Amino acid sequence: MGVRSSHPGWWLLALLLSPLPAWAHGSIPGANVFYDGFLHPFLAPAYAISLAALALWLGGQGKARKGLVIGGLALGLLAGALLAGRLGDPNTDLALLLLALACSLMVAFQWQGPRWWVTSVTFALGAAVALGSGDPAFSGSPRLILIAGACVGAVILVGQIAFWVDELVVRYRLRSALIAVRIVSSWLSASPCCWWPWHGLPAEPSLKTRLTRLNRRFRC
Image 1 (cartoon, rainbow, N blue to C red):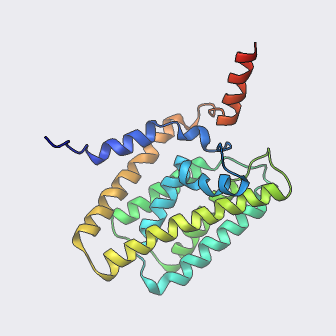
Image 2 (tube, rainbow, N blue to C red; image 1 turned 90 degrees about the vertical axis):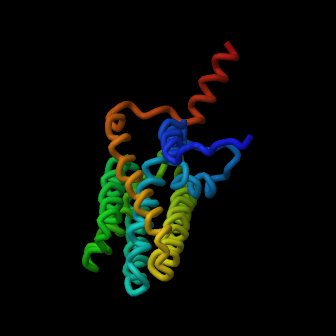
């Protein structure tokens, strides 16, 4: 007797209820500084949701706007990386969720927007990602490596999703791919609404902090 596959919506619910927020601004066990930053856009929910929504939207822009997309994202990441320390490593989760909501709705309504709008949204989201990827616990070269890793991870995440959307939806015009993009965009538009009620609550301690507290308890 075969095992029935669960509804895809349960996977999204599992992601929302998973302990990944604890790694949003904390160290990942077994990873060096670069990979700690590299995995940050994939494991921090606000970053993963916003970058995925941006990629779905950018993937439908077509190759004619490829230069705008690359330039806007690169400049945004660079600006955010340069300003992160001076602004005190701000928490940009709310800004990322707002941008995710906007991008996912634009995908759902198939609205590409003018060229200046594409550049502005891409720049803003790139800057928010880099601004929030810093960690006050790091300084000097390790800090730069951490932010650089996060920027590389963000570019790869956006690039891979946007590439396949462009190939399957824009180039080959597969109806199944178009339907899948719309379904995912609807999930992504609902995700920020699920996160906002908890945004004002105190941030969860990082995994490193919780392990340190646990070790102290055992020592006592």
